[in-house]
Length: 81
Image (cartoon, rainbow, N blue to C red; front, side):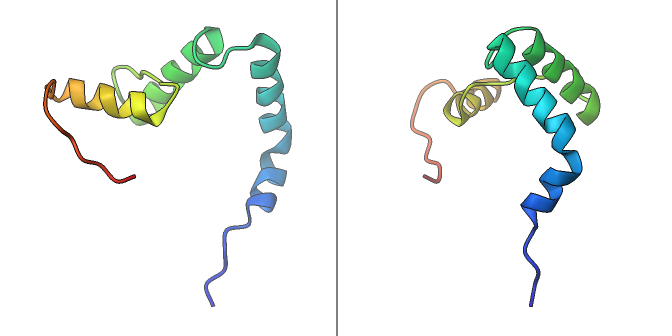
């Protein structure tokens, strides 16, 4: 039998850090823009070795940005639901 990922155990290992980050976001209402998002984008770009990072508020927006970055402007694009 293949064991399932124990998400509860993973959360318990990082509970303090996760809870503090959650409270910081909720207190400042920095969900899509603001200093916390700027910090995330900078940190993530450094982590993956990218020049920059642009977070989005939805997967739809992320897909649109990716398509535009690839030069696809008009036409039909089919993706999985």
